[in-house]
Length: 148
Image (tube, helix red, strand yellow):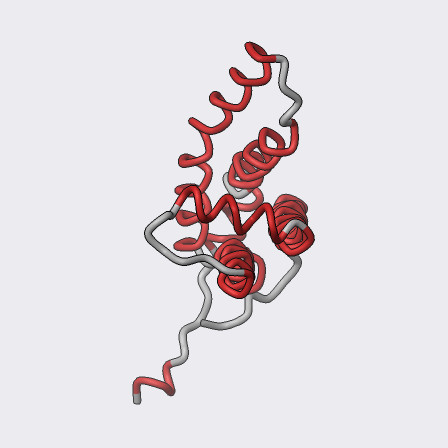
């Protein structure tokens, strides 16, 4: 893959900022609330023996998983990474409904979870703006010398 040249559209920049902020928030909150993260992992995956070290590995892995397609889109203009982000957003859609329903019915204030799910969907939509689509469709040269 080659680095994409030329100016990036504002929607690509905003996508990168939103998703990097989302990933960084998840990393920092996971590391600051490590005991809560560990107990959540124990309840969600009881077949594993979770300790602080594995919780740190889990939080770091989530950070990396989120940032990988962001780097691929923003630096390399990867259309495949755009599809990965779209899949992440489609997975978030039912969560948005669930969080909104919980907030409405039970008067809970879990706005952080709702806003995180919304950020993923909004960021994916930014990749389908006309300027972003045109930028991602540009022909980029391949490394011909690699295949010779």
